[in-house]
Length: 470
Ligand code: PA5
Image (cartoon, rainbow, N blue to C red):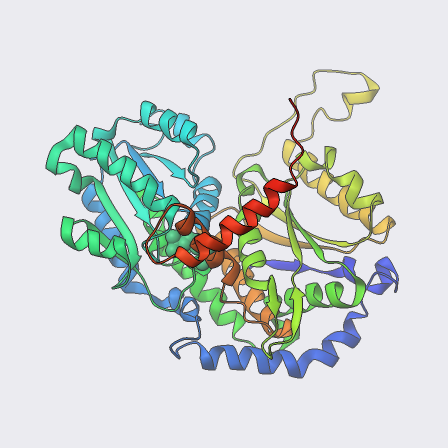
């Protein structure tokens, strides 16, 4: 099981100005937490609550279809190309980076055990797209286009470029190289898939992009490169069962949510850093940043009061950022809570050979890189405590599909509980939608003329204030 070590947020370690009296707070909030967890589990099956992701640990059918498709295409493709953005890309990216052998795309086919390379195109940089297309043999590439709405400009523009190139290379057979993951009924991609005859997977109703990693959105890319999706779903299910416990003393998602909430609202720690001590986990903070920012960053609470809520997520990786950001975290403004992720057992043990006798480095010889990395984490937590900086450590036994699924699902439940503590709707994203609409307007989509006019006015205002240098 995962462990949550929150000792370094307690007053006895970092003092009462910056720390929490956790035994008091846990007792105080126990009834509220019990109610929140009970309510979430009662509401989860009701339409319109956007809580269907809480059922994904039990979605054996999806797992079966995903595995069936992966088995069917096995050996046919050298490359998987994922088109998607935000919640449609970040979960798959974070999990493949963590679970595949490092430098996967550079390995030989036999070192990849004949599984394909995988590329996530989650931006629309023309230079990057052209470079990727120059490199990929499209005749041996399976394209998985993922968009729940089926109309996100970035994803659909990518798809239009790639469909055109695929068709030129493969003729009508290009259809066999496309698999679409989208809403069951709504959206252009669904319509297009029906008309063109693409293989499709469904993003179930009432699951927002950032909560969709355990649907076909994340599972299909994982299965295509040979990651054990049964283990993933088992991890989600077991974590879900554990987190149904309404007792705050037994529920790590509730503990983490409450501690972050209190540190933000009572102690001014409104910056939330996630820092795994593992390069393979380096994209987990990217996934978590989206989950946290889009879920908790809201203008109004559930009663319509303007609150402009939300802790700002920050991404870091240890030990690298010890030599970059840590100086600020330790001596700069005391406005952060740092969540470390510690891996108890790495897959490999790397010995540091005893080859130098110099006093300055001789002590390293005979130790392992594993010891050094975890010693650096311990050193960082102690240094932070010396400066009364709250920090939490999530410990995972090892990097496996099972434990990573547990970690991500725990963070999803933590986010849902946080939303209730802040009394905000954690499941909408009006500002993301507004930007999408403005993009449609700027690109001349019919029906967005009012937005186009508004943008024109704002731009004209801006242009009057621009200072021009020759
Ligand atoms: O979490 C969200 O809802 C968003 O970040 C979406 O995932 C993102 O905007 C992409 O949307 P779509 O899957 O509709 O293309």
